[in-house]
Length: 275
Ligand SMILES: [Zn+2]
Image 1 (spheres, rainbow, N blue to C red):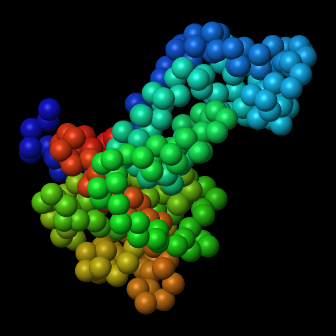
Image 2: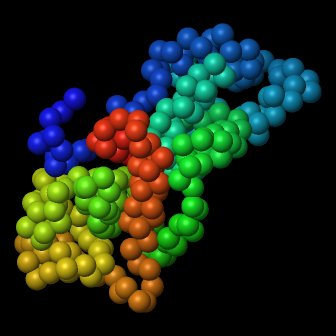
């Protein structure tokens, strides 16, 4: 476990580290999965067994199915064999992410199986930790412009907390929905600039930066810092449209996950599991 003093570090979340099961295992389990074997047989030119109801969801996708290195693909997504689905679902919900977030992770991680969306829903609904903290506030609505065409073009920034004595600086990429979260002890302009500088040095500056008019994010100093990095700063009007809905949504989901996972590891680990 890391010492307390490193808690202020920015944690960068990499998809690869969250890969729930290895390609090798998928390959091995696919080979012994009767349904997926039948699908592979069908792709190879065999005739599907007549009236096999289980094959139905594959038949409609037939032209988009392929086999690569022993794994079955639907488009770019790996089809997870039955024997690994429980494990993948459990991994998806490890940080007590809600339905929306779990589906987002599944989409970004490129995996799929028939009925996956329903099973995600059932799992999130039946988790006892999630039940204890459920208050179901409606998620912040998204402003039309929040669907960006390219990654790391527009970042939505917000603060969350205090939670367990810490504050969180959150940056969400409008295109990929990729979150960056820095746990910080204070939210002074100076600290915020330092953390944003670290993010920029990793990913390059975003072209646009959307925030509310909070004292740190709306300050002259912040404005100058962004200008020096070539970032256009857009301050969302608090009483007008909810332009920063993307960051707000993420913060709502993060709060839920951190509450539901209380007592299940350090704040840092729980944040990592969620993101
Ligand atoms: Zn849960």
